[in-house]
Amino acid sequence: AVCHPVCLNGQCTSPNSCSCFPGWRGNHCDIPVCHPVCLNGQCTSPNSCTCFPGWRGNHCDIPVCVSGCLHGTCTKPNRCTCHNGWINDQCGVGPCNKALNGTSGVITSPNYPRKFPFKLKGIWHITVNCGKRIMLSFIIRKTKRCRADYLEIQDADSNIEKVRLCNTSYKYYSSTNKIFVTLINNHDNSRKGFKIKWKTINST
Image (cartoon, rainbow, N blue to C red; front, side, top):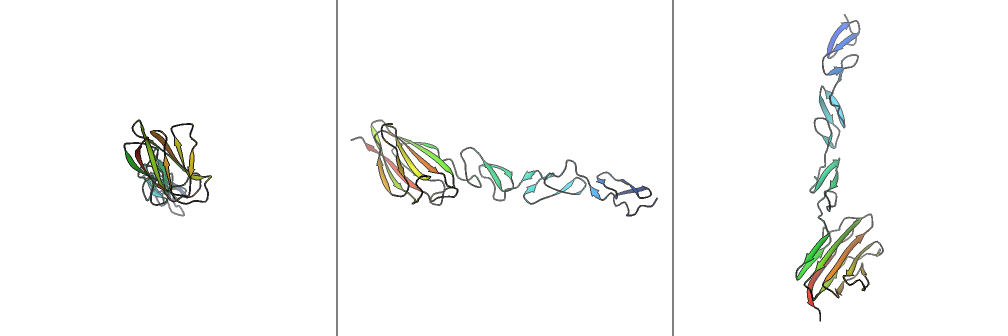
């Protein structure tokens, strides 16, 4: 029997009719077969996939994040899904929701002194010994958009009005031994960071 074109990976069993070897298909046995299929790539030889950029694995089913995901999982090419509390493109910025205690300390925005990620909310809860108060000293990045980008101070005494800061250095004295500091950033781009020093002071 004669087959024209020839059977590239099979036998000519009758005129212009090919019987393909395992792993090949098509009228001329020129199309490789991959099983399972190549999800994000091309089957270039029997059960051998050539993956598209951003994918790897025997079946091109594993996404690649070139910069890695430090505290998360690579779910799409160069796209990390971060573990709870972690943010940024590589999930490298840690949680900013923290409970603090002791006699003094420092609070900084994620990534400080560089810009912190967009659309971020963080809460710091400071508690000192009973009968003491807290003094906060702020160094804040300047912004013209105080409605969506600011720090908020809430005393544990609910009768005291919240204080919103966005563009100034400032000192705050609590009336109790507990205080909440909240960072709000609702913009679609990153912002310059801030630094807060806190310490215990006497009630009188």
